[in-house]
Image (tube, rainbow, N blue to C red):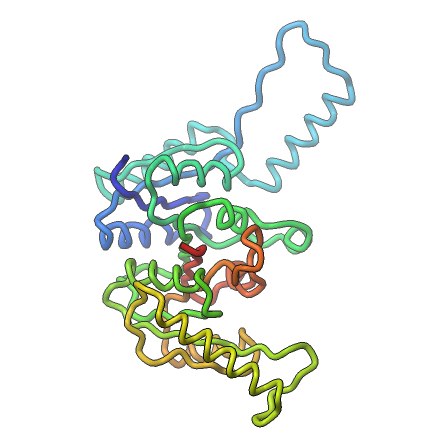
Length: 296
């Protein structure tokens, strides 16, 4: 089996400008190989000489080609992408490897991660498409769901190793997996965790109310089981259970701590084939670097 690797995926846009630098710091921390990757569209097969092509087929092919160029914004020539990968690898050191992949990014990167014994995939920011994002999963979301490794979304300038990690936890195995990986890539950081208490639809938080007290009791039980899970880093304080909206609570606590890495599980275990709503929201617009992990 190959030596463990950190895979940094780049699309050569400003969205992934800090991916390679952060991946290099993580690789150094984990004593792993650094491997740069770019997924390009597969070259179109040539039409065999004498093969009949209908006018409709030709028109459809042309339309798909135009859509591919406009939506994917990939380098048009594979050779150009390979040169850019090679040049980027040289700036990071002579031992840095690179791979030019073809096909759907989620499939290609997932397969590469398995082949190269990857510990972590490092991605840049998602490119927002307002209409398409409503209708379907983003490429980033597909990568997170398909990959067997945790995914780090890196978009802050990597001036140093992470100093403060904040976990948004639902006390699930996925949340624990995210914290464990955070401890590996940020061994010198302080660690904190919060839980946003969600009441049943239509209920209001009110101490002494039966629904409120039941929700708090249940959350405390889950917290106890969570803290008993093996391999968690030492936390600065017992994870706080805070009634309220997830985004508001997270924003307040992150600003208070000046956290430079957030971590979250992909889902609470209800459906492993889908992302949780909050994980999905954070992935699309993370306020700082974000680590996403599946249950171990």
